[in-house]
Image (cartoon, rainbow, N blue to C red; front, side):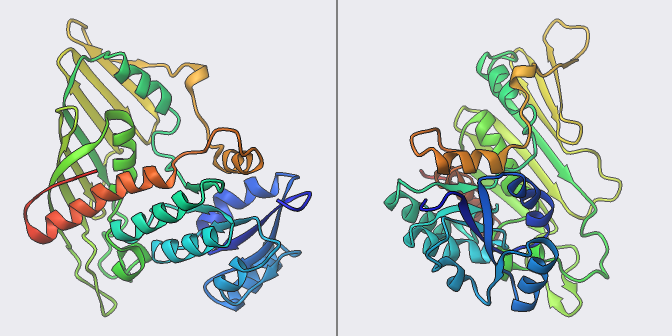
Length: 343
């Protein structure tokens, strides 16, 4: 930093940036957003006019990354731009905050990881999912303390009707040229599961695209996916994802161990547990000291301003860990085979 304020350039000022990141950044007196590059110059100009009147709209992201006064590049684009913008920003000496999912595929994620490793003085952070954030520390504590003994079976269900309407045009997340191998909420929950239960070491997956044509566009991203996951700790998992489920129940995780069962309702952010011998499972209150709220922007800015302090999560290293599984699922579906996941 060479200024009194941390100066940020935004690449990709879409809904997630406007609704989630921008309010938090504008509330920080030591942060200044100085430039915006959106999908078109007209949209960059409009975004600045409506939300950041003192920022400069730019025609392309490369121009923004090259600005000398920029300290941070904040990436809010779909995954197809994550690798080129992140790598270019890191090579230019900028700190990077990148929206999830990490990259189009594992190869791109590894390129981002390599760029970050070459510049350990720079902060490179991915946006974490809000899913399970509130009870994250408590869940990790419960599993570490073996409240249900040794986990042997895992079931996760994430169903929604978001793609049920066959007449709707393809969302950008259904366009493989924009999102790559990322499918539905697979990457989000793989990130959460590996944080709570440890690495997934093999997958066998099947998928189906229910509505193959949308407004003359051929959809190649599946509408539903079922994954058999083998965890390093010995647990077996069934992970089900759908975007074509009417009247879908809340996203839910069930972990079965040799001493009991642990459940997480992701919509309500509630944890239920029962041990062998209990009359019924009980809802557990998340201890105040373990409850986590959304402080993502604050955590990133603090890390940039305090180089010797803790690095925010997820890092690019952690992103590669979930992209290994996302890539393995895509490879399993394509090859109709079991895929082992090497470190």
